[in-house]
Image (tube, rainbow, N blue to C red; front, side):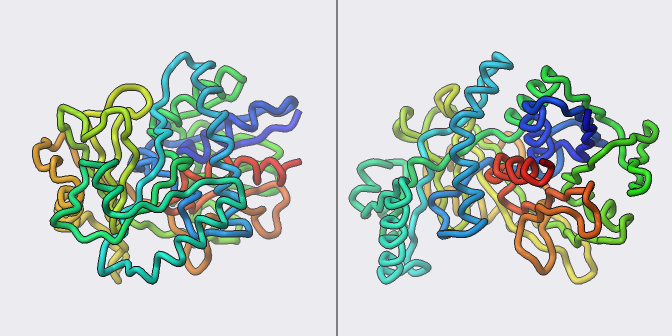
Length: 367
């Protein structure tokens, strides 16, 4: 029996554990120094911008398409196993096109993308201002200047923490051994061992899915993958009633600020997540949450949906996204020089979106 060790149990590690647990003949151990769904996963808003993205071909588009397709079967699959509902918004993403940041000339590119997606079997709708006002009365089209909007009905949003916990439960039922509160201290390729705070684990293959912690592990094998943090902040708002139509609550984005209905697909949204900032380290490497940027994010959300001014702030939070330095995200590959070590990390802002596709790529590398 082949023994696999997965280091890290955010959304990537948990998805790997579950998807690989469906394959006979594997013994799987997952190690994480924290409980599941911490770090970047616990801070994510779960907005999956796949079809609405401008990725048209190659690996970037294939991964998005693979993941979106898999989520349609994965969510009901996990709900049937765990007997728990997973908040999963099937009403799409609405992207507002503000002027002057977006011009009417840019609409030609969106029309071309709409045609491309149609040919690929997907749907994008381009709305004018009158349609926005009619379909989405929660959006202020009077004082804000929009040239239109894009509605992507087949893109999705979900609760990353709820999903990760469901993946862990389902994988546990399939025999995966999770070791939480156990830190990975060092790796040796010969013999194939991982030293941890709970002792040494010997295995056939190792998958490094430890986010920002992946750099140190790869450095021990003299193949450093440089992954650096990008901080993001978000806000949980309690409004007490749904914005506009309670039966139609897609995630809304404008100028990279998101308004996300909470608990979508499970109950009518009365709370909303707003986020997220993008904050890079200073020259000295330090990174700290900028309160002003969070305030600006909230003001932008209220400008888009004025009713949010009546909401109360339940909490604010921040997290560090793992971003690879000087190369595209994510990093999914066999570590150079090692047939038994795979890195699946540094997904930056698309960990939730790309988790199923990442698992598929890793499976192809293992077998």
